[in-house]
Image (cartoon, rainbow, N blue to C red; front, side, top):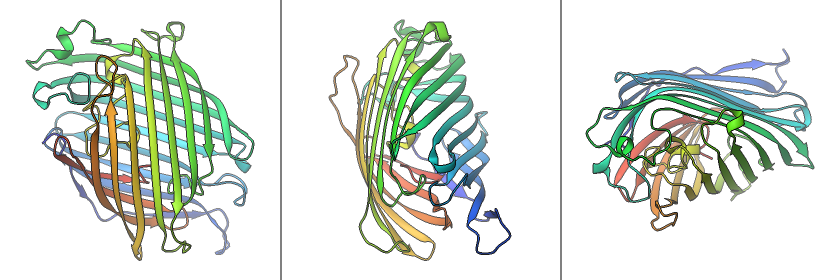
Length: 365
């Protein structure tokens, strides 16, 4: 039941449109979509909060795509709290791509050890506080390529467990049992030919990031994170008002060295593995592939079908088990000019035979 998430959407939401010019024919350059929400989950009780999505354009509309920012805050009746803000900014003519994220957690979650077949009966509830900060500055090189530096910080403290099972406390090899800091400066390359950052109909996206964590930057351990994210979007018809899109994604993440347990590669990160709770499976290697069919249905409504195959490495480093997922959902177009969708997906993790309902603004990938 810990994977079951029932989301009650407050249907009265507001979409605010602000125009850069008073001329009624001027292109909309700023769109703000606030959305209150209530989340009910047997694991975290009743969650309540708000989410806002902001699309804005900087520069010439003929050469610059929309930038995007999101912010949300949520508390729960079981004392959990999360707040996050992230942004992707494209400057005039897309000379620079600036991406960042800030998250604060006062949270608790279940951990299950390492590998893709860990038992749900051997979970341990961990409480902790954490701050995560990322910031990238990427310069355009060529037509659709960006390269630059990324700084990442993850500071986790007050890690504690009140449960009887002592996986986290008894295993002396677990790194970061009470607190840890990961601080890195790395290289990041992005190729992005998508026609829209949030909801692509066509184009490609490729990202390669290498983040070494150094003790001289404040890390408690030295280790390196490598991530490769490849996406492809194909429009199956030529009607942009009634699009049919096939989207595919392949992701690979590798941790090398003494990676802290709480931020190992895992299911659920980067909007992957819908159908499994974030952190349900962890390992030094994470691989994922998924495909999604998206189609316009009627007026502001659309639908999707998706499936995926995912795995993490076992304690010995090998990939032995594949965990499939499948699901479907609906889309509600909130802002047509910027293609801002309200996403409601139901996904099932076919190994654990559990499912989850996912609520978000923007596509999963």
